[in-house]
Image 1 (cartoon, one colour):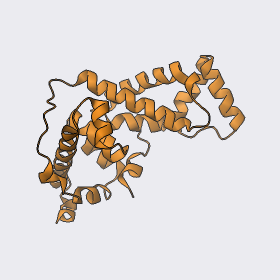
Image 2: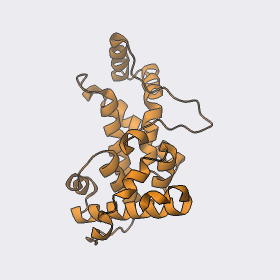
Image 3: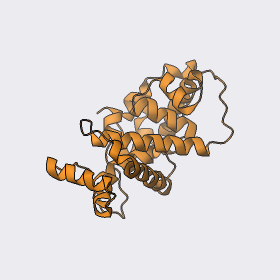
Length: 211
């Protein structure tokens, strides 16, 4: 299974009831739910939150250090969703629209919290050819991948997510994070190298795939 598809699985903690993440099947009900959110009705907002809680939490988890931080980003993201819900165009996927807001909120969170990170272009070619990391990651569970990705530094983790999971190119990442393309490529290569090191140390049963 592709990494992006696998890691998009809903994440929930053992102490929480698994949230449903499907859109209402009835088009009329769906429209009424959105109209209720536009009118800022608390019941409609609560319903929308419950419907998309699980899948959006999994998005926020990828960009943060832990569950508590992910919940903070999630709540801030939903505040933006409710504030801008009138701008949503029904011709587009609501899931994708909300997800884009969550990713942007996570990026804003990263940019507000990064400290003294260098934008100097670093050498990345040494690790760029290590394609085996991708094949190894596809063999891990979504939970195992998430745990590894969360151990990356915020800079490495953010670039890895945007490039590998979301499909952005280095130019787009550089623009969104206000870094150079070289730094984006460097951070991606270093993220891959860090992930390989963690797999070799914590999941030795998978190391033979690197050979």
